[in-house]
Image (cartoon, rainbow, N blue to C red):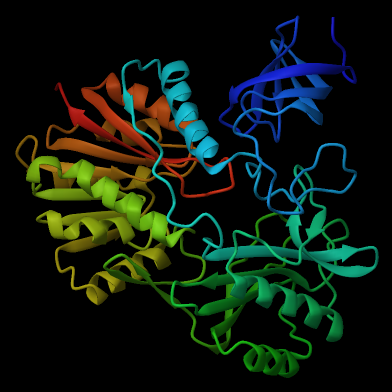
Amino acid sequence: MESAGDIVEVRIERMAPEGQGLGRIERVGRVVFVRYAAPGDRLRVRLESLHPGYAVGRLLEVLEPGTDRVEPPCPLHFKPGSRSLPCGGCDWQQLSAHGRLKAKRAVVQDCLRRIGRLDGVAVEETLPSPKEERYRNKVIIPFGRTGGKVSAGFYAPGSHEIVNFSDCLVQPELSVRIALKVKALCAELGWEPYDAAGHRGWLRHLFVRTNEEGRALLVLVTQDESFPMRGKFLSAIRSSFPEVSGILRNIQPHRTSVVLGKAWESVWGETELEERLGPLRLRACPEAFLQVNTPASAALYGLVSDMLFAGGWRPRLAVDLYCGVGAIALWISARAERVLGIEENRRAVEDARRNARLNGAANAEFAAGRVETALGVLRRELEPLPPGSACAVLDPPRAGCSVPVLKSLRSSALRRIAYISCNPATFARDASRLSKSGWKLLSVRPVDLFPQTSHIESAGVFERIGP
C-alpha cells in the first residue's frame, strides 16, 4: 500500500480537465494526477497526497518522454528537480502545439462521456489560435517584495509568492516593457508594494490592456487614494511609451484577493481602449469582460454564427445571455431580425449600447440584470413568437448555467442554442440537462483561445428535437 512521500513510477494516459496528467502507478494501477505531464510520459513521481481512488503526485523526473512532450520555451516554466519557483501561468508549455490541440479535444470528449453521459456527440478537431505567442490583450501583475527588493510577476502555482519575470511569451512586448518600467519606477519613486500578509503597502497590481493596433491603457491598483510622486510617474510613462493612450487608477482598500475595488480615477488621457474584432469596433471600460485573445475570439464568434444560422436560417429573435459589452450580439446582428443581450454589469450594458451605435446595429437591444433575475424579460420576448423562430447564445462563467436559466430555454420559440463554454465539465453537465428537456447536442468544437495553457474554450450547438 502506497503512502504519502513514496516515490513511484507512473505512466501518463491522458490529460485531465484541471490540467494535470492522469496516469497510473506501474504494476499497481492506482490513478495519480501529475502536473506538467504529457500523454505517454513515464515519470518518477513523489506522492504528495492520497485520496479514495486516486493520488496526487509531484513530478521528479521524466524517465521516458511521450511523443507530444517538448522543451518548454519559457525559462520560468516548471522544471523537474529544480528548486526554483515556477511561474503559475502557462501550465501546458511541455506539450507540442499538435499535442495541446489533441489533448483539449480529448478532454472535451471525456467530459461529455463521463460527466454528461452523452455518447455519439461529434467533437471536432480543436480550432487553433492564429497566434501561439504574444496573444493576450490583458495582463494583471501583482507587486510585492522578495528578498527586500520590489517584485512583479505572476504567482507560483497554489501560492501568493511572486515569480519575477523579464519577459512573458504570451504577453505583447509592449505590456512587458510597461510592466518592467513600472517595476523600476516603484523602486525609484519610493512606492511601497503591497504586503498581503500585513495588509500594508500602496501599489497592489498593475493592469495593462492593449489592442491590435498597438495601443495600451494602464491601470495602477492601489491600497488608498494617495498618489506619491504622481507628476514624476506620469512624465516617465508618457515619455517612455507614446503608445499609452490613457492612465487610470483603481483603489482597492480591502483585505481581499479580489483585484479591483469599486473606486476608479482617471489620471491622464483616455479612459477606454477601442478594439477591432473582425468587422466590429468595440469600446469598453477597463473592468468590462473582453476575451483576452482577439484573433482567436473572431474565429470563435465566426464559428458560433455559422452554427446558429446553418442553412441560411434567419431567426426573428436572437438572445445573447451573459452578453458583456455586446461582442457576440453585435457579431450575429446582421443575420437575425432582432438581437437582445442580457448582462448583469450595468457599465458593460452601457458599453454594449454604445457599441451598437458605433457599429450601426439598430436591431440590437440590451437589458441590464443578472440572467437569473431577468428571466421574466426573456419569457416576455419569447412567448409571442411562433415555434422555432428564435435562437439563443449562452456564454456563462466557469460555473455554467443555473437550473432556472436552463429551464427558461424550454420555450417552443427557440430552435437552436449555441453554448460557449470555458469549462468542459460544467458544459457537459449542462448539455446533459438540456438533452433531457427537448434538445440534442449536434456538435462541439474546442477552440484554443489560450495557447500554452490548459484552459479550454469550446462551442456547441443544440437543436430542438422535442417539446
